[in-house]
Image (cartoon, one colour):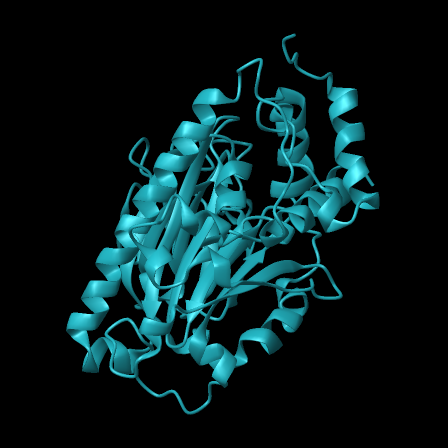
Length: 383
């Protein structure tokens, strides 16, 4: 007998059931969760338009006037460091007749519309609008570029499309305590990553929040260093703002001089931190896979129902970049391979989601983070 698509109402009831299940009682999401237009619209409205989403790093725009374009859902943005040194997220739409102002990245003291040459300062103020004398509707002071809320957390830039949302900093306070020894704030990026992965955004999210898939997908890469069998499930934080896991290192990678072992200043790290990887997934769509003085990060945003835009990079401490350039390069090459493996996985998953035999399966105890993610979805979308 074929497995037919659930109705939207049934899908919501299925999601709500996660709120009353223990981790060990949970099945994977039904395939409708990755295909439903109604659920996708609800996610955009209740999750992505009201949460803090990572749009890059402050180091991308180190100097006054540096900027880059970033499209967040259907909002085209200019991320810019103004002449006053402040980083802003401005609308990339001219206030005259909607033309985008910039493409790519660069450095400038002003933005000039390519359509009718309206010109704006790097803080969004309208500076000039040719031949507008005589217009009874024109008010220069009211024609500046709208700004979106932006916060810098540990070098990462987050934007919220909701002007009334709670600030980001208090929400990250618990996470700060968990990662304080990793010194994320001082790390620098040695590899930048942007791609589009096939499949619903939740496929990418799920893939990034557990070590269990090392045993198959990454058997020739990170499984050798952090085998899935050494996964250490962790209880969620009390505020439920993120989910996390640790994974122990294979014994041969504990040799002090092994090239994949932590380098640089290690005095502040505990024995657990030195001998495990630490994965943190901050809801709704930001993840970091950390080792001492190193951090592989990714951020996800929907590009329609069955496509996901992925932004990320690989960070190391300044002393690792300066003192161990060969090791930093070797790690960079490894992360490129791992990201490619993950992208292939979401592509294959997306191909089979419409199969009438695509039924739900039980989660492994090593996938407790997925159960926590499903509860986050239920709390946000239903309750």
